[in-house]
Image (cartoon, rainbow, N blue to C red; front, top):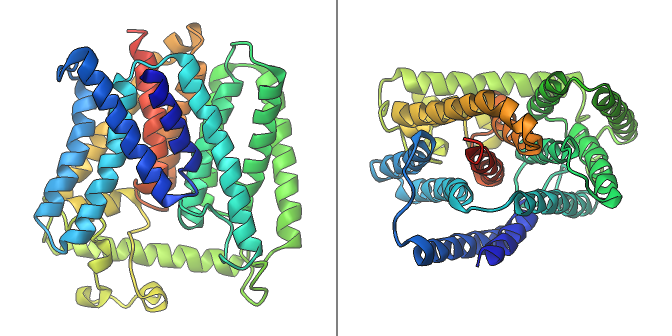
Length: 398
């Protein structure tokens, strides 16, 4: 039964960035299979709960309460369901009892799924289906970049692992890193790029390996040069040559201006003093009209909607109130503490790969989240898979 769960989880991470309906089906089958096995082996009894599992459960409960205390209910239910998906993945992997080999295989499938998704996205981009390079299901460029950043760090984690692996696997990981790195730079999401740089810097500083520094530097140079050549060749959208250059100063200035507008709208909404405890409901940010707050927003006038505050924590505060924000802070704080406490144990027990994956699962969405999208959808599911694996493996070291 456990092997069946791994197969379904592998199918889930493979289609995660690209296919919406299969993703949901595989998630449901995986969780159901896990629950059936757990019931057969242990009944309804779970081992003693700890701070992180209780916090993960509270993330879902807060989103549900926030949904039920607000309107429109439909948007909130979608948000609560999204939270259920990523919190359940963390708990299933944490309690799954999977081996290192099984978890590593999931990361390899994750990389393969990202490459397949990039190929799918490239076909859509060059055939005028989409106006920018990204994953079909993982969303716009910023969300796709965060997802890609998570996969990059997880695959880098496998390469710092001391366990012997087939030469073909190492070659596959290096080629994948190169291709994903070029794609990320071409997407141009500065928040996600900065988050990946932070992770790689931490890994290099902790490893104290000249070989790692040499390999990483060579790979970064190759990625950067290739990306610059690609950008210089196709500085505009391939299928919309009259659109302003994606990498122009004008574009970045407009992006920064609109981000500041979104922050201002969120802060203004909070300053009204309404809905501070439970928020306005998950994914109900789009119900905000800047005019009601006395704000004229060029971003709102151009797009006609506000999906989020372009800041992870402001969005969480507005949508799920101070309770939801505190739950998120506690969860990320517990993950950070776990990483600090277990680094030396992971280093000495040949689990550096899962520590690096966990580092990415925390740093990429949090750092990128200061400038970009909230913690939900595909990249949240992927991050929770990596964090669940990190907690499961480091639990064995206690």
